[in-house]
Length: 225
Length: 361
Image 1 (spheres, helix red, strand yellow):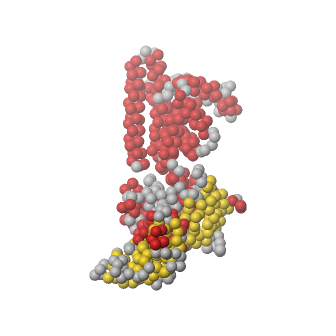
Image 2 (cartoon, one colour):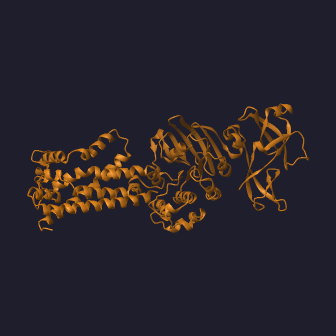
Image 3 (cartoon, chains in turn green, blue):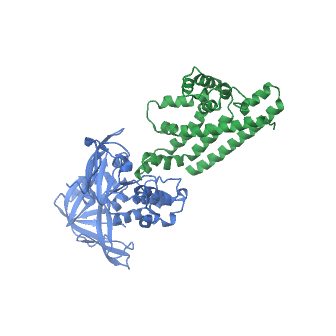
């Protein structure tokens, strides 16, 4: 491995870890709401959450870049707060990754809550557990396979993202350059050997994630039956 | 009616094909069986008492107001002192048996130790299951754990929603005897939803008959079984349920003698010791009427009585005849032709020939 590859690999892992952990915190309550609500906004919110799944990453990256930039309202807020602009920074990448991977985190958790049904929460209520208590002591443990799937999927998806990172981060070596964008740079510079090394790692990594997911699914089924 | 010792349920709830509309005052002790065909609103009624569903009206147990729309009171389920057993056991699959049991315990008393479970674990005979995973339990074992779990919180009322319906027939014997034991040992009122006559006969002290969301009758078991409403709800299974005591045993003939009121009946011996209380069921189709006492018959149980009622039966050719024999009423299924042939009417003296007596242990 060429020593230049390490900063990008480390940054990729760092970005994926931070994004998927934050995603879990955002996606769990969102998935719970979507699985329980009878609100008229359910369809709208559900469509918005799913949008990143179908939009080209460049479109997503473009709008987030505009929002974070000096004329975007997030950019203006961060500048007023003295935080500077988030575009072309690690924080900007995290924000982009969260939006990009949101459906991959929400859907498995929502599915887990929905297959669980209302019964476990009703049982918990008859055993004197308040709704919040029941959420933590019953719903979350029962949805564990879904939570793990969400974590794994959003981590892997963040590692594999390209368009959003390129738009928001700008592929700055040592600062916002991740593995996928570095491969792109290598190819542009005709450094095929170095691109190969990184690409092979990505293939291996993705394979392992999918293997882990299928293991997880088998365990999950055992828990349910 | 005193409000302190009763359960008052006054609710209305529109459903898809009927409106649940009840105004019940039930004894705050013993087992009240809520009986009716499926889709009659039994489960909805139970869920409303538990607060799992919101109907309009009021629910008051022994002075504690759980719901009263007039005063804007609605206690959520988790603040009601209930024990609830669902049709399928619904145990928490992520916890083992013991932790399923302690789930409620920890929430009513933070300092409670697992020792507090002992009497209930013993009552339902599940001490050997405590460390087991839920997935490894049979249907009957699951339901017994579910009942124990509901009792652990020391509820003021136990609500059971067809607890045997999801268990196959052969396995029901794993649960029913324990339910009967509860019936004897438990000091709290029990609402028991079922459409099984067998469970009704074994467990009920009081019967609420529900049809299309309305209460058709609410009476003590002995009054209910002799009533036209329950007889028509039971259809082919119409008959009476009587409480008696084993007084003698004929070991040579394998027969048991049971005293019911002032009468003595013979029934096949089922190994119940002399002195024990017992419930028995006499189906209307197993009873025939004669005008005089016959000794030249194979039928062993003959009771003298007076016809007190003649009601239409399921089939237009037949009638259900109520005969009062001193202190008990027996129902017999008789064809209309036989009635007119023998010129039988209300007030006539007859002998009831009881072909078989089913013991309900």
